[in-house]
Structure formats: structure tokens, C-alpha cells
Length: 404
Image (tube, rainbow, N blue to C red; front, side, top):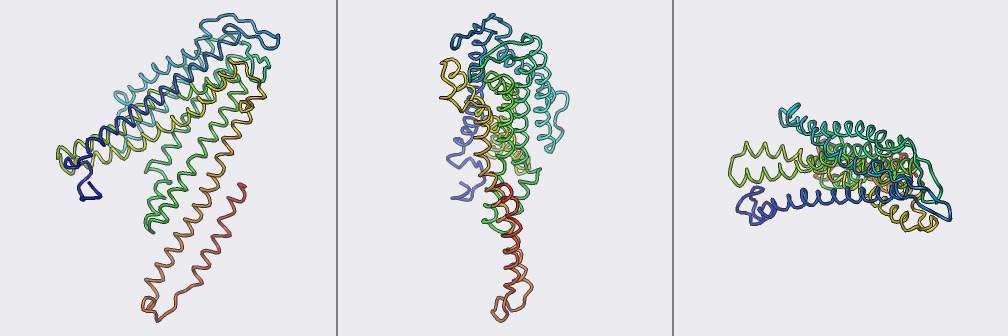
């Protein structure tokens, strides 16, 4: 409607307006909820499978060497205790936004939702500490993927879950930084619009590429140290930790389509421009909060896929040489290596964008200040533009060269 007939967004005479509102619910609420719940269930199952083959469960024999199982029911249910505790913690965290410290105005919405994520993460860390020392024995034995027997202490299980919790928060925080209009990345992209669509596209792509650096590094660190602490059990539990604040993450994610649909209802009900302005401001914050939920989904998918594969390899007694991706250095190395081209591209594209901005500003200056330039009676200052491109080509390639 906006493109073809210049109608307002969500105008009731637009045939697709109802489909748009329904699609927000299907995609951002039902779809994202199913995605994250599936990751949660898969991580829980992977952790239970691995723990059942340790001394906490039935034990395991490899090449004639056996680990005796003690069938410690409370310890085997450690993954389920983490899952259940996360639901309770997120329920009480909701009270901070609804009763204890609600948002007073539109500008307070994003900080309030961010505070919910911080509080739920901190409470989950404390709860995980109690569960780790309360339900697990001081130490237990399990087979690593290379068939070595490792003695795991309960504090190492806490570290594994805590790594997942912290990396999940980092991914959510970095998503907010790169999508919220409160931070410099989005402001830089908006400023690049002043010089045309080309610089805007360059800056936008560079921003997207740059946004994957911290999440990829945090996932690599989480996988490496979780594996070092307790093998595939640690990776599965770190995935559970990342999803431990799932209920809060989904609530934050659902805010986006709810506020978007509120704007649609206001437009269709003809409530006036003032109401529409308020719902648009709410929708701007909602776009950021919806992106945070997607960040959790993508980050947890990497951990869950590795945890499921590790559970399969463990249960099927597959030789470590045939599944070397489970090495604690290989998979994190793959993540970091896959991220480096995006980092390099982000730096080079932003360098091109900065040079292009300077070039456009210089061309505008000459058009506006040199008399007779447009009439062809005066020559432009070609040297100025050459100096800009030459200086940028030399100076801006330093950081990308250092990365390589």
C-alpha cells in the first residue's frame, strides 16, 4: 500500500494488512518460541544421554576398561534441575518489570527489558551454584570423546553452565548494541544516509559483518573451556545455561511483534496521529528486543548442535579419530576461522565507506564554493579528491592487514 498507492502503513484498505499482523505473531512469537523450545529440549536430552553413561548413571565400558555406575538419581537429573530452576527464576524476574521497577516512559522501555535479562542471568548464576553443589557429588568419572577417563568436580559443572549463561547475555547485549538507535553503530548508519544510498549500503553491510565478532568469540571460548571442564557433558550443560533465561528472552522477544501489532490496530481503528507516534516509538524499541531473541536462538543452535552430535558419538561408541570435530580446539577454531572473513570485510567496507563519505563531502564543497564550476568556466580541484582516496587507501588498510 505504501509503495503502490502511498497509503499509511497498516491502513485498513490495504488487502495484506491482516496477513501482516498475523505474520508477526506466527514468525516472531510462535516460530521463535518453537525454535528456542526445541533447542532447550535437545540440549536437555543431550545432557541426560551423556550423564547416563558416566558414573552418575549406568557407567560405561570402553576397550575393557569400565566406569562403575552408581545410579545417583539426583545427580543424573542435574540438567532437568537447571531447566526447571530457569523457569522459576524468570517468573520472579518478570515482577521487576511489572511491579518493582516498571518503565515510566517510552525511553525507559529498553533499559527495563535489558535489566530483566541482567537480573535473570545473575539469579540463574546463584541458583546454578546451589544446584551444582547440592545435587552433584564432589566428583564423578566420565569418558571423554578420546576415550580417556576424566574426573569431573562439581565446581567444573558450575563453570560450564555459567559460561553458557554469560555468553548468552553477551550475545544479547551485542545484539542490542548493533540494533538499537541508542548506540553508535546504528547512528553511524543513519549518518551515512546523508551522502546517498551507496554509502548507506556499505555502512549497513559492514555493521552486519562486524556484529558477528563478539558472539563467535564468546561461543568459541564457551565451547573450549566447557569441554576442558567436563567434556561433552559440559558443552550440553553450557547450552542449557545459555537457554536458562529462555522465558525472559522470549518475553523480551515477544514485545516486538506485540508493539508492532499495536501500531497496526491504532491505524486501523483511526485513533489519530498522536497514538500512532507512540506506537511507532514502542515499535522502534520492539525491533531491538526482537533481535535479542534471535541472537539467543542463533547462539544456542551452535552449542546444541555440537552437544547433540557429542551425545550421539558418545552413545554409539564412535572412535574419536572419526569425529575429530569434537576436539576442544577444532570446533572453536572453526567458529573463529569462519568469523575472520566477516571481520576483515567489515573493516575494509567501513574504510571504503569513510573514504566515500569524505569524497562526497569534498565534491559538495567544491560545487558550493567554487564559482563557475557548474558552468564549466572554472576547473575543479582534482588534487583534493586524489589526496582523499590516496590517504584512505594507505591509512585505512593498516587494521585489516594486521588482522591477516
